[in-house]
Length: 241
Image (cartoon, rainbow, N blue to C red; front, side, top):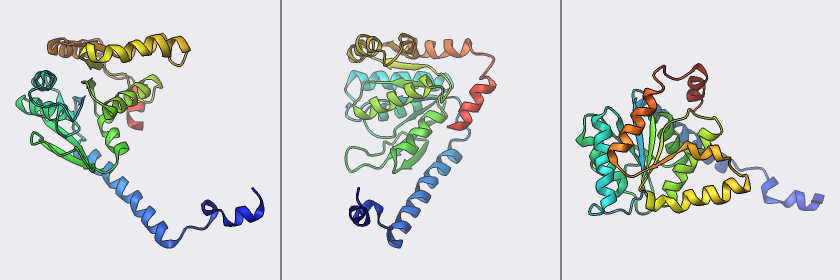
């Protein structure tokens, strides 16, 4: 880049006070979401985060399966955390509220599709996906991932990446409804492992299950094997979230 181009390049121009003020207030807005989430959910243990499509209607068997899973987990002592919207999220909150533990909704403001469901004991509202995702991970004792779209895949990739790289403790990650997931899991195995972009051991980070009782049993079995609680290293990672 020559001096003339550099002198007129918009990226290299001083930012105006008005723009700077707007950016600064955006930082405070983001901080506010984190502070509110940390305060409201400070005692939320144990909990299970449940994900899935906002477009799944109540008469769909997957909606009903999600409701059953959430109810069983709630009765087993796990608070149920969802994205707070319709579809699978609604089913998760509905089943969680029917049980003995709290039902939590981490709602996101979107131009379409997302509206809050009525089955939330605690409702938080976010403008930013990234601060919302921290809340999903920080307090989760397990992830239950139902069939869904890009948002669901984003949440799945997030937790797999964090566990794989050691940025958070290992927790049970359960993909539900094997016909839906078999193509993706096959691609992991046949493409990612073969290309060396993940290791074969990374496939052990999750399981695929279809039955509600099997899901609850899997989560309980995992923590029965870890009765000593998190190690000092795991606790340190947990505090970094």
